Amino acid sequence: MAELHINVTEIRNNIIKLSEYLKKHKIKWSLITKVFSGDKEIMQHILTPDIVKDIHSVGDSRLSSLKRLKDWNKDLVTIYLKPPAHAYIEDVIDYADISLNSSYKTIQALDKVAKKRNKIHKVIIMVELGELREGVNREDLFDFYDKVFKLENIEVVGLGSNLGCMYGVEPTYDKLLQLNLYKEVIETRHNSKLPLISGGSSITLPLLETGMVPKDINHFRIGEAAFFGTSPLENTQFLDLCTDTFNFYTQIIELEEKQIVPDGVINDASIGHSADINDEDIGKTAYKAILDFGLLDVDREGLTPDDKDITFVGITSDMTVVDIGDNKDENGKQKYKIGDKICLDPDYISVARLLNSRFIERKIIMDGKEC
Image (cartoon, rainbow, N blue to C red):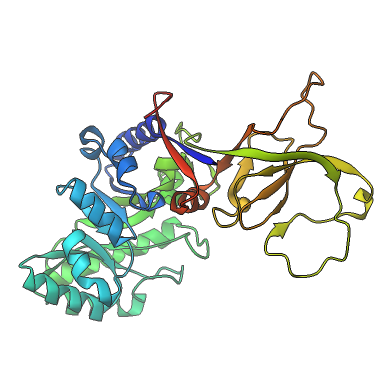
């Protein structure tokens, strides 16, 4: 069975380094754990007391994940990361201490349930800054806030924005400065403080290095940098964070020298994806290995072989074919055989999909040993 290895030691080190770095910049941060789909065992190894004490909160986009976190540690401050669906308002109040919101009707519903629960629910109002995902339109923000401010069981603890996730709109200084200006106007109008201005994520981290984050941006929501050591702004390593935190090991279940180009009439009935076919490859052969995972587990687009000589050939629902060339190492000896494992490095989305697959075994690695 294919295996996903999770290097918890290096992930914990990344979180510690990020906490120290952000503290120097006077920024609070939320650890965004949605890549783990609420896996309790993984979270127990990562969110230990020594790690939790240095982060503001834990965020997720699945209420079931927040429930597991609260069941495990009721003292964790949790953030629900997307505008709540009305069918789950009660769960939001029960399992999220803070939620991100952009709809007045939704906040009204949260207020109603919070009153029944005898709770004060905290919200961060999301502002549309050009990414065209969630967010109150800028011209409507002040009237929107005026109405929310009157709700008895809702406490607005901040403003936020989402950039870089859907269209890839970059979080520039000018974009983030708008949040600062809205904060100042709202605080003046209502004679109240907004403690969190949540304008940052992993994609914003490099701006801190260049001093391009406005002074009032004081809260980041970070997942990718903590778990993968990278910032998606340029898809490169951030600081000296570890990028070798996940390894996907898949087993060779067939290994044969075969034709490079398929033989027969090719139609559109394929259920998988295949590499482009070149006419110059007609009649040529290569060693092809079949691996024990498929589209039901993960799309190969997010997987990079450690062995640079391996190239993708095709993928179907439960098997993947790769080209391993002449199957010889640098000394001319056989490189792979049936039963050997090939290591693939997965990206963020690939890890999330692999952890949701029932057919992929997961192994937690601490200090080089399996837990």
